[in-house]
Length: 343
Image (cartoon, rainbow, N blue to C red; front, side, top):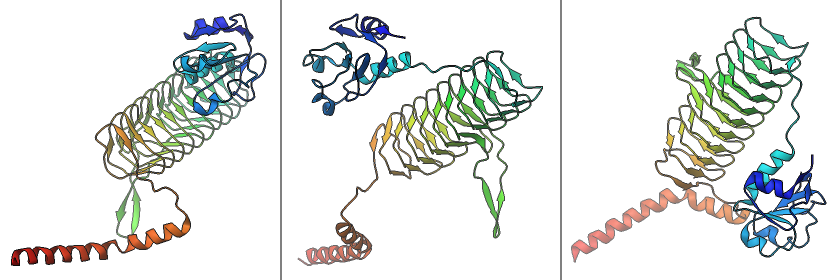
């Protein structure tokens, strides 16, 4: 449904430059936007295309707006405004309420009348499905699990027994919440499984990407705070606690009993060893290894950037000689100290 530029400005706290009556029907990127579409300029690389875009309007900050002659919405954070407008103009279509004929729902489960249960989904005994919940095809909700109002399981999502999901969460296909943690104790030459008796408790407004897994606690719960965003292919082990509004990129592995603070940003392929804590407002760059606690806010990295192969081979040779080099330095220090004493 078309909406005027002036109406978008009113809804999202922007200032209009140009024709406020311009009709906007959708969003697009700066290069491909055409009539009826709105785009945004988010960084310096986009600025050179300001004069060439065919978009009906652009979302700009005040500096870029001064150099643009066309229609615009002027805001402090163009990308954030674009996200709000995109969500407003492209609101997903909600499926009809009710339980699909091919779903299997236990008689003791409590399903809100406005919930949607897709085909081939299984809801076990005593599960609680809240108002406006949407559960797509092929999902599994275990015994005693609770799913809060407005949460969406897109499809083929597995929720273990007694797990708790808050309100307005989104779980992408392949997500597993509440599987057993990796708990074993060595008995001679064989491993004995430690029963995993805790739960997973997920807060409100959490999003979990495709094929990510969150293990139940061994005794205490694994907890995910409100507003946490987890990308695809992330492993969260048992007893982990993740603070509110932390974002975790793809392929991160978090070992058991780790505590991550609020508003952290964990880059792709970061490995975090177990039984440590990370303070609030920490940023860990991609491919880093976190092997000890981080006690202060800031940006951390342990990655080695790509080098030409020949250069890297020489560095590896030097690394292998570090112990020998250290021993020689220590010997030289002793000899120098002995000479000083002799004088």
